[in-house]
Image (cartoon, rainbow, N blue to C red):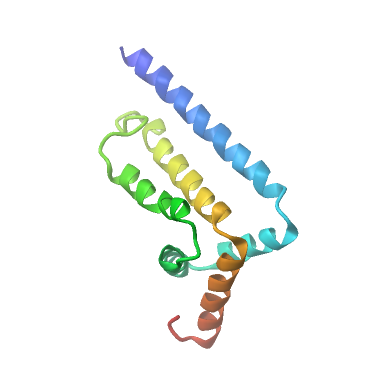
Length: 133
């Protein structure tokens, strides 16, 4: 029985790795503007990234189906049942990390670029001035 669970867990982790690689390759084909926005996004502090996510969730111009990614991601991470049980060493927590990476990538990828850039610029200006955004 344990062998079956480990096999299923390994298969699901492999699927998540494939999805992450596909997202990475699709990100490489983005226009140069999108790549620059992603670079600017990665330079933000964790606090600023959380503020950005909160602003995007509150923005009416972001499609509702994109906004549902964040609550679903939080729900999955808070749920005691996982794709791969956490009692399996390394692999058990690796699935949570992969789901988090894929979820955040999808949220950023499908948020309209102009809206993402607008909120990012606001946060960067506030950071440069030293004032809260």
